[in-house]
Every structure is written in C-alpha cells, then in structure tokens.
Image (cartoon, rainbow, N blue to C red; front, side, top):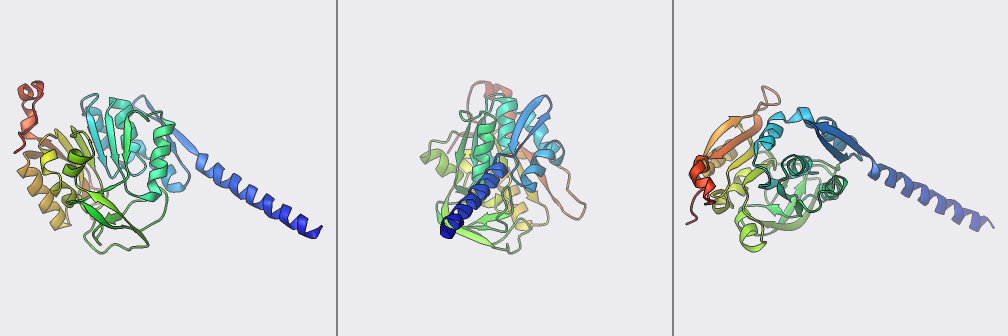
Length: 281
C-alpha cells in the first residue's frame, strides 16, 4: 500500500512538472509594429525582451526591411529566433531563408514561424555558414533560449577575443556559394547578417553570391580590425558601397549595423532587364 502511494505521488509530480514545462513553452507575446501584427514565443526573459524591444532595439534594421522590394529573396544569416525573418515575410512578403545553427534557438525559430503562419514563406537551414565546407565545433557562451554570442569553427567572439565556451558540439558548416550551388538555395536579393564575429569569414565564402545581391545589412565591430577591414575589402571588391551606419549601443562600444548597396544594382535599367548585379566570372 505504501509503495502504491509512493508511485502515485511520483507520477503526479512528473505530471505537474510536464504541465509547468508545457505552460512555459506555450507562453507568447503579440506585438504590433507599423500596422504589422507579430506573435513571438516568449518562454524566458530573453525571448520576452526580444519581443518587447522589437520596435526600439534596431530601428535601422526595421527601416531597411521596410525598404526592400516586395516578394524578394531574403537571407537571414544568424536568424536567432527569427524576429527579422518574421517581419520581412509578413511586411514585405519576402521569401526568407533563415540560417541558424544553434540548437538553443532552432525550436523557437520554428515556433515563431508557426505562430505567424509563415511555413510556406520561411525556410530554416540549420547549418552554420563559413568560408568553406566541413564539420567543426559550434561553440556557445550561453545555453539560454534566444541567446547569442556563439561561434562556428573559430574560438573568438564579436570583439575578436577568445569566446567563453560553455557548451559545444560538432555540426556542419557550408559557404554561401556552396548553399546556392548544392542546396538549391536561391541567390539572395537582400542579406541580413549578424553572427557575432565571423561575418568576414562568411562573406569570403560568398563572393559569387554577393554579385547578385542588391543590399546587405551586416553587423560590424569597428574595433575588431581584422573583421572590419576584411568585410570592407570583400564588399568593395564585390561592387558594394557603404550606404549607412547604424547607431552604436554606447559610445564606448563601436558595434553597429552597416547597410551596403551594390553599385551595379543601382542601375535601374539593368535591374529591370532581370540581369544579375554583376556577371559571374
């Protein structure tokens, strides 16, 4: 009899635990920005913050998304939980390709796509982008849902310094050009890139794809000279010019979004002909 009661109490405990987990995972927040309604999964404080701060955290990113051509191909590199993928798909009817390798973000990226009924507009690519193709370590500085500051293949973060690796696993990395040639991913019209440190490595693996890209918004750390200089060199070589710099979060933290436009794409006549921004060699 005592054993049966104990088994019953244990079963009730696990049922209660599962109920709490389910309740947490089902939490969501609805917001509106410029008459566009968005619903985001909010299982923890960070995801809730991402939803609440949507309109204020990166206004230049939202303005840029609002300026892209309707129905265009939009690559979200470092999609995290997908807040900008969702906005591009809803606001501009973009066909979105969301690159996100973090196991701590993928579930909530998928939940957000589902909550907004965008399953046919947003495709998840759960691979890391890099300057080549191969398996390597994906290193995380946090295991929090919705977290950032992770790196693939390298050991440095967005400041160029060694990343505190608290959780890692081996996964696949591919280049942008490999994704186009071998995964049937369409060439991007627009790219949003925020990967906390290896932006220059990813750009180096996408030179041919960049020739077809109209604009790119990329986060750059002005004090991480290797990243900044290599991004500048690659984008200039591919025909881009710097159009706008976003504001820094603090005067002492010179990390911000940069918007680059392909000079060849500014030729409206060529655009209307449906030709690439630059011919592929």
